[in-house]
Image (cartoon, rainbow, N blue to C red; front, top):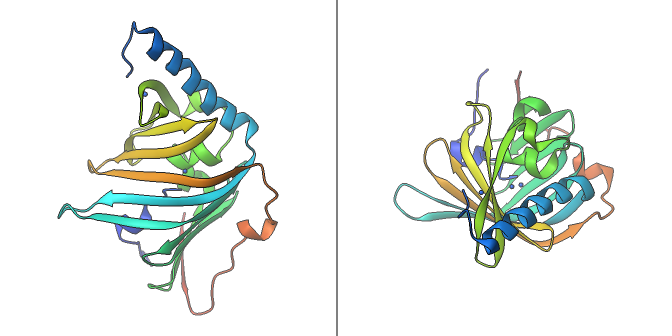
Length: 216
């Protein structure tokens, strides 16, 4: 049984995550600061909760907007819950990733390594050295944020690069260019670093009546 979700519902916008102007002192300072903020976030923020808004332009030029909540706990546990305009849930217990679409009554189960790999989720929710999976470069400051560009080293990651805007040591916006040339923008709000999160947030039970599709 090989069932897959529509592409715009499959984006892990986590979903969860920089070619600078060389020779300018202000940009050089931003390069160091942005890279330090990213590595410090990975090293020091072991869990977080917040809200997100994800916008993606459709082919007709109209933006699709999703809103919801997220939580994560390193290494590899996360909960990404779309609330509007439709319900969708992605949960990882660190070993398996479950993607549940109530409208389709379908659950897709994947190994965490396959689902996250060199993805934006690995930047936000993973652990370890970023240099193993990504080439990280600096971007000039804009919109009051300090930016990085992370490009996956593997050619089959499904996206070209992701830009992450930081402020006060936390990621505030993520802009992902996918393999189809479309850009998704995710804005994070009400982000709380290192809160206590119940273990149940990262556990998933297949709802009664839903089809389970295992992707191995």
